[in-house]
Image (cartoon, rainbow, N blue to C red; front, side, top):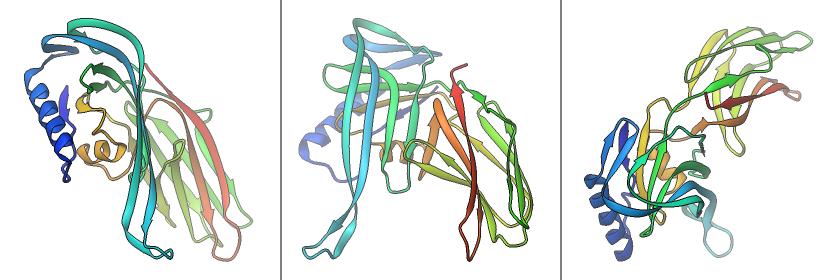
Length: 257
């Protein structure tokens, strides 16, 4: 299991710098053996799910002139399910969901534990069953045709794009979460795409005052990200230069295996 200590690299206030040191020190003192986490000492621990969401707005001067860049507003809540006192924690596979768009806006629903001092021990154990209601998506236009053939894989799904375009400019295939989207394929020629959710077990050590969807995406090496369990949507779009685009979509579920 890959252990990640998640703290911002940007300039922090004095109190948050102290919190950052606390997280680093705690992270260095824990041990991971398969799915068993061993703490340096017995702790009072709350087990549950972190709910963390962020929204992006533009900074502006007075008078409505744009200034700087995006300003992120973040809300965090740890939904407690049970409380215990222990030094050993078993990381049992559970459902999670991560959605982050390129602006940094997004939502996290990740299982784990919270200590009394606000330290979070979160984890992701990749285990997916992809359930598509049908094996393909097809669009017929007056002179155009596109078919997306879908194949589930261990950590995601593959798509084969077959098409014949006369009036349409190109085809787009888009993966949609609740509030986030990923462009999987675009073009005017046949091709393939392969999308994978997180496939490496991850142990995430952070603090409830520091974690954000954007920071998590950054530490995983992603600008945007859709991964996890629940319902998703896959949309195919035929784009036309002078008339309304044609769309067809299916919703599919990802459950814990």
